[in-house]
Picture 1: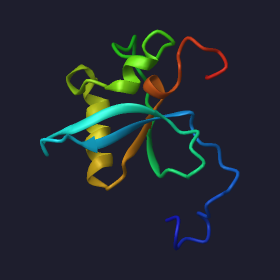
Picture 2: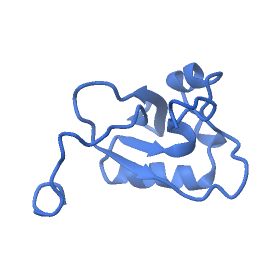
Picture 3: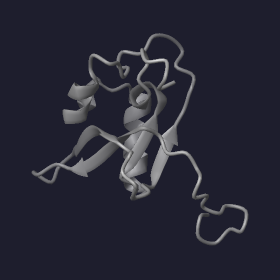
Picture 4: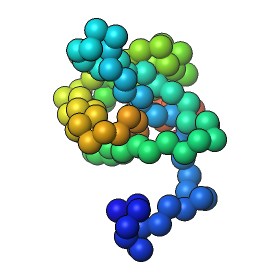
Length: 113
């Protein structure tokens, strides 16, 4: 889409989210290591996005209290199935980053929403 469709050009002014979930293969070669990364890097990152109706309180949300923890690691088994499925699909498509509103927007910071 981005390289061959005339209606899908890459905009240099397109906004980039402040956080993305990064997926890398574990050192053991099995499974994915997940962590939250800042996307302020001037190098443009290709990412997929998941947005959906939460349907109620989320067991995992990004907050000012847990952002440093998520920057170290996000535990696969703690994620809702919807997010796990999106991560698997994104990885299979060869995309390293995923944006998910509940985990990439600091929910208790008005300036990040």
